[in-house]
Length: 137
Ligand SMILES: [Cu+2]
Image (tube, rainbow, N blue to C red; front, side, top):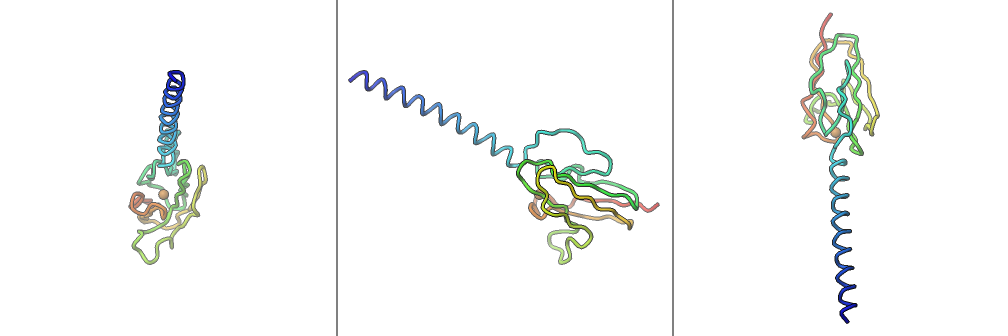
């Protein structure tokens, strides 16, 4: 009888350890899904990274005729680069990327000077009011 009780105790301990490990793994995966990014490299010239559910840098200045390339560095979470504000009737009319998966890129060339506000359609609350400033020659 004591033997049986000891066996049950051992099984319970193992179950507790297993569920603790499972919880830790679930937490780690959740953190990655929420936008954790293994890369800390800075974006290059005329380049915007989408990572940790943000545009990095949130504001970029280029010259007329140059391009900006957006790259999604987030794991699992898709993003877009969409001109305008989510409330605008004509958002996306200046530029509109596809839904970018991890490491996917989108490039747009700006032929007119001005300030172009943009956002992410997947995260219109967290990723908005980013800006491309295009300087006249
Ligand atoms: Cu997004």
